[in-house]
Image 1 (spheres, rainbow, N blue to C red):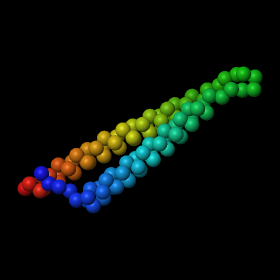
Image 2: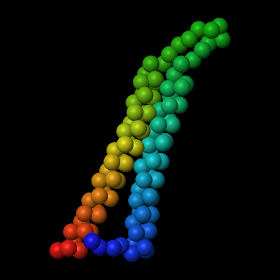
Image 3: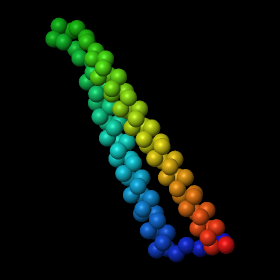
Image 4: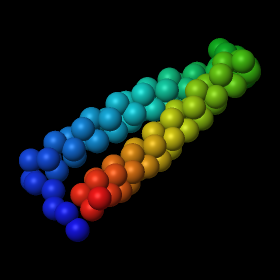
Length: 95
């Protein structure tokens, strides 16, 4: 079993954190825009009538779903990268 220096461990941790920050930001923006579109798709008129803008509602739902899927896929991809990097490092030290 090999050891990793504190400096290398911190550098790798900050790289992973930066990538996750970018993924989280993109997912949050997509979800926020989609949620705003959903919230504003239904309007109430002065006399109490209700109208729904269906294309806006559907587009908002798609954007919100895309934001959630972006976060999920980015998290799984990052987890895969961390595991693969650990295996690669371990294999390179033993060979």
